[in-house]
Length: 278
Length: 281
Image (cartoon, rainbow over all chains, first blue to last red; front, side):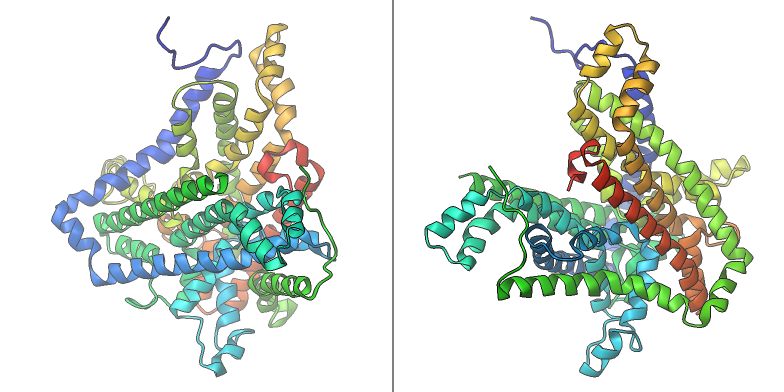
């Protein structure tokens, strides 16, 4: 018995150059830059780092970014499920158009989305002028941040759930129907549990995207310190003051908290999948 | 197993769901898209076209094309190399490599810009040494290229790796065994098998390279006519209250997004079987 080789033998050539270039490119563009992000905040010392990331303005920005990203992802799960259901189950004129339109937030540059949403939700905008008399202000408030995050996150839940919903076994639903389950019971007891892991994936992707989002948010947010200022903007502000370590500190905390959030979500997915299989 | 399939909405509940879904897509997605063009044309076609006569707007368009023209081919080559190594060979550490390739997708664009300032800025690791040698990176086109390269790194690789892994190495092995050279095998066997997926990845990569805002915003310095790409020029005009100008340039980007979406949808319909599994719907 020989020791396990790190690569299986193959007659195909080119492994060396291909892997070499891949590692070079990743090292240059991903590993080296991220090493700087991980290393630089500690120039402040442990205490300085802590003071830098617990300033009230930073805490407020992190709270807004996380809170709004979670809320936006939740909204996207609810409406994403409705949209996916309609796209997968119903035959209606314009279905393929609606299906294609779902991906627009992937394709539309964020700055364009940002100024368009601001124009719509400002006091004199198409939607803002309806909401203003009701006392609801969206543009230049934390609500505006939520609106922008819902926009950028919309495709994720739909695209995560769609393939699973398409593959749902018709016989399961028919069996439930035969056994006397009403439509609501069929959805709650049969369909939703099967979709749960995909929903969690979509939620996680939408959350991660919304958390880091910058372009579409800063125009509509108003960017008031302590009120409607998001964490990525704080990085930009600190860089403009040449506070590199402080900017990197906020960046590192964002990455750390995002990783923690995604880890939690992944764990819950494992549990959901196990329950689904049982 | 069979799936449920499409049927016409029959019950009241079905119509209600349909109405909610259509209204949601209309308000969240279609309305902002329409508003871009409406705002751009608010003062008439003359003013709209006038916005493109601005030399700074033209410089922004040229710069956007230049940055995308550099970044997309490089990341396409990277995607092909990474997919060849990862999908056609079995080696340890593959999972870690895949995570690294995907990483730029889960980083905030602002962080993708910040890291270059940490390396090459005035207080960066290599900034002072390069400055002494007369080389500036931050606030120049080089920085825009680096930031865009990082943001768009995964696009082509992600389309190719699942497809090439699914296709396996049998055809290539046969070609090589029959005496074909490595390059011939790659260009005559592998490339034809993945050409639509490659095009799909290049399409998404191009759209993102031209539309990227956060990462390039951090490293550009917003020098009009010099380091402003189209999205950055939109911001500058908007902050100067030149709304028609801002939305005019934005309408060009929105048009680009629509073309991307149309081509992407076309590829999904026409060549579904030749794209990676996640794209077949």
